[in-house]
Length: 173
Figure 1 (tube, rainbow, N blue to C red):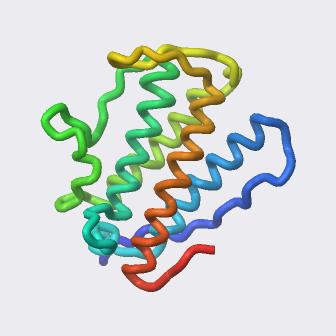
Figure 2: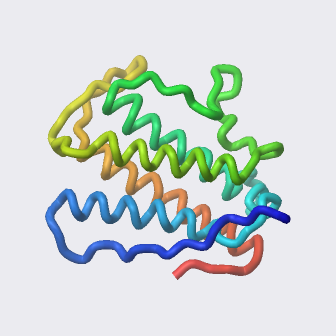
């Protein structure tokens, strides 16, 4: 039997709430939007680069955003040493190389990273600061991470809309 990306029920974005509720709600909405763009597609469809000349695929976006979740929430905010499933120093863009990717395993990795990201921020203040890993050593707060992640997903969900429409004609709202 051919694996297909599962259908999802997307929770509507929040209309009212405090700052934390709004940030978490919008981030979850965009996380679910990415999965909605993938729902019902086979591994081969998820690997399809359909907006020439770009080689970007839906599965590449899932893999990329799994690593972005780990980078900002675990490696930077928590200070954990993260073993990235795709990134290597020889191929920093390996998350986007889906030629032999296992979509079912990659979706499980994505879901695990989202769960770990959610756990990383439980009980933590939006004002809590950290210093970025790497040579730039910039200081951020958790609020910035939420805003950045919403922006990151929103941008990539726009890509996902175009890719999905070219694969099978399904369009966003």
